[in-house]
Length: 148
Image (tube, rainbow, N blue to C red):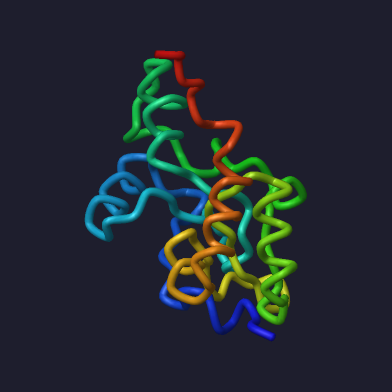
């Protein structure tokens, strides 16, 4: 069976708890990504910040991205959704679907070693499996369509 280590992107970028949201936004732009895990000094993830978080939780409330630190947005490791590097694909999909997350940091003994995104799943799994996953994760976030 396929494991997280086979699906994950091992070159995961992250930001530190003392990095500013300006730094996070610049790194996201440079890397072409929409989210970065937030790690402590030993690469233990304590949260994840998305481009939407920066807009809504920082800029949208009038806070300064230069002085708002990533640690202020970290929700804490106990509420963060992660997966072990040895987890099998059914566990990965189940965790992402149950928690309706599109990105899943991968840990080895509590240390960030990779990340799994929707795109990674699409590259490694059959189309029907990916379609079911996207439907399960995105169903509640899609706007209702109006009848014609």
